[in-house]
Length: 102
Image (cartoon, rainbow, N blue to C red; front, top):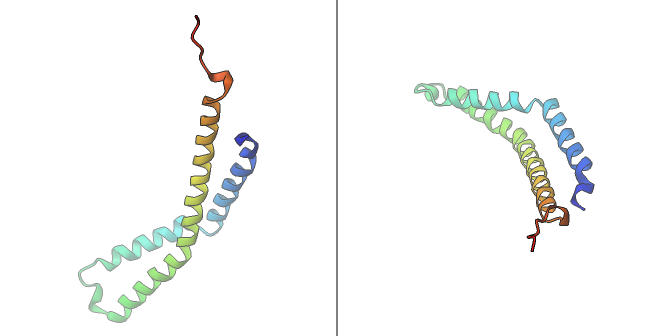
């Protein structure tokens, strides 16, 4: 039965989100957004050394965040698929079937 895996799936999701808090993923994404916004300025390339350093920092941060973002997406997909499977299993169970009275 699908419901046999409920605890393991939700424990995995909780552990994933604990790791995301430890690595401060939201803070890293905020840094990326701030640096990307900075790179849109008209005078961004006036100092090429600073501009290149900023772009490298963005690249380095994305190398850190990308696998964590993928893990979050995968775990969210897993819990969503589990919830759908449980719902489908419940809808297809003999207890949920409606029979016409003759």
